[in-house]
Length: 405
Image (cartoon, rainbow, N blue to C red):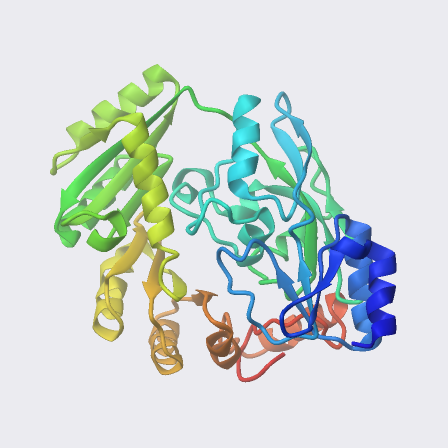
């Protein structure tokens, strides 16, 4: 980057918003959607490769690029309407900060992704990472009403709205969920909130994995109204045995009734946790699933959960594993090679099980891609979408692998 272009960025964003890293590469930290658009437009004009960086607590900021675009300047809560249960926030806002502000207003965002609580909202949406609460409240896309996206050539697209009944343009926002930044930089999101529950109760069952997966199926057959039902390996739960964890939220009477039902239909002892140990348990498991250098997730039918965990144990290991028996999502974290990932992905594909590389160092992401090869015809559709949102392209993202896209 020439000094003239560097100064042009500084003039547009402010001196403190444009710096150079230790290798001399520029880093832009705009504090507005318009600032992001300026950076992307200039990058497109100059044919730079841009690496999007959030809080750096989930995806390593290591993709080779001419310019780093940080969302840390986009960290504000713009609007909260507790009565309407909606909020508008900037994408660089850490989830933990948002939850604290919502608590003070009697509201709650029912999302608990793996990793550190400092993860940004933009990171959660871009990677599509939902935690145990997806069992009762659905995946990340179910919590989005709309948002603002800046394309690779600097256009600003505003989709959806800030009220629950407004769904116009919603699909454009949904495209960003799990897109890993390939379709634009998310700068603002409109979120669907929930009233903060009066009671949150956690129950733990400990024992052999097969017994606990059987128990989970029993709970599902009985339509237990749990907000979370997650199976954790011993290391993930910091326990000597596998753990099936339930969380029940709602009114005092409603939660008490579900606890009684769970106890009555359980073949293994259910141990309740007090509020502070329960919070520590869920936070600890979330951190554990982000402690490996790489993380993969598989969309498994509930009946095939045991088989896929066995496959992971055989081909990789079963040290850090979490699984949602009700929703069928399986997450693994640890050390992962390109060869091992391709082998697992091939076996999973033969069984109609999608595998996403959710988190990994750039060399692995570049070689294998977040999704691997698409089915026939899908790749062309994705390429057209990318060209619409990121011509050339500008953003350093490896969706399919096999080289730097």
